[in-house]
Image (cartoon, rainbow, N blue to C red; front, side):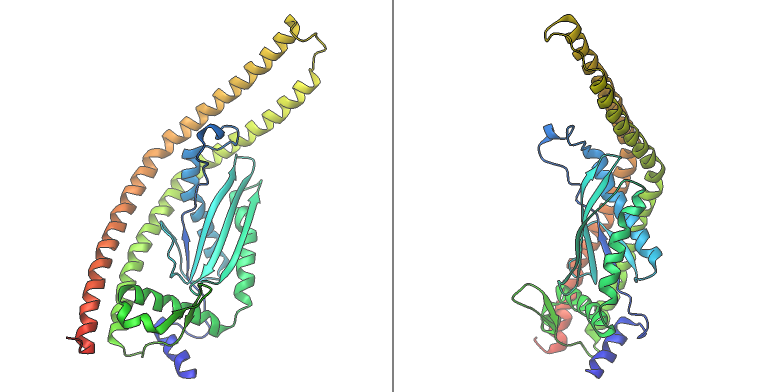
Length: 328
């Protein structure tokens, strides 16, 4: 056991005091209902939800980095099931007044750390405070060996995806769907050294993608806050309007001119408010759409490079494994 622990330290190039797991934060599910006719009643704005699904993960990433409790924290466009810790999320409510998300965190073993809904009526940074506490509480309940085992299993799952014949036997999937680390390669294993170099290259690309999300955050932050302020104003307006309507209830006979005029005035005010809301939505979309399109184009280019490289690396590693094992 002590020998395996030392090998794992060598593989991860860390000291025993630095067992900080890396976190991958996948872009969120925007949570837009398929029934488009329900969007207005539910205060769902698809384009804005799409922007939030890319913007909010970076807000979470910043909060995780600022906590100082974790290793590298990256925003990734797709979930990486072999990540040391993978965080996924879904936006369940966003109307400017309230912001709510469902978050899930799972480690490389497949063990779920957190599955919880969080909401806020204040700043969006506050949205993730409870999640950070919950995640850290799980972390502090695990010993150093377990944390390093999670990191080691992440590396083995990544290695097995590239060279299954070489590394498939280093871990097993249990009947409940979770994974167990069985052993680790020798610290002098040449195939493992190649895997680590490939992963380092992929991390460089992932960091470049993460930078694109940072640029999006910087572009969107101020405009998004204006949008949220407007939505809070609109929510307050609707509450005040409902109170005014209640106070202004008429005793006029149903169907009379006075009753019809009262209904028309209420309808007219509602339509004016809806038109004002639509104008703000269109303005926000027009402001953000070129930024989103440019970011997605660049991320698609980098993802294409990684995917092409992944296929080539898998082929080369397979050939090397056959040569080194004498399979030819």
